[in-house]
Length: 126
Image (cartoon, rainbow, N blue to C red; front, side, top):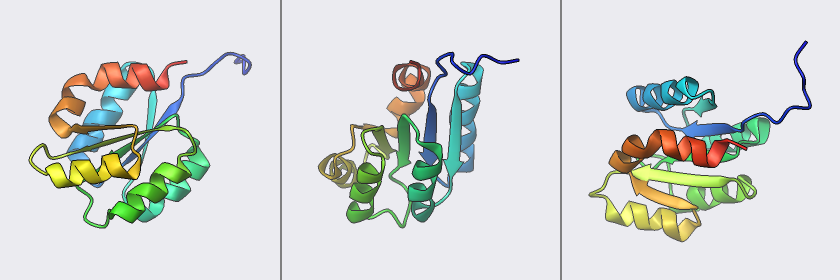
C-alpha cells in the first residue's frame, strides 16, 4: 500500500493546442517523474486549474483566443501558482502582454524548450 503522507511532486497544467510541443513537455516531465496535464483551450484553463490545482501553469501565448484579459484571468485563477508564459521570440508585444498580465515568468519558446527539465524541477518538485 502506498504511503499517502509522503510529499508528492506537484502537477503542472499546460494550456496549448500545439500537439508536438505538448508531447515534448509531457514526455520530459514523465522522464523526470513529474506530471503535466494538458488542456487545449483558454476556456478550459480555468476548469483545469480548479480541478488540478497545479503548482505551475504553462501558458502558450500562441493560442489565438488568448487575449490580455484572459491572461490576467488565468493568472488570478492560478491563485499563487507559478504562471510561466511562453511564445515566439519575435512577438515581443505578446510577451510584454503576458508580463503586464502578471505572469510569473515570460520567455521565448526556445528558452522553455532548452531549459525545460530545470524549469520543471524548479517549479514542481517539493
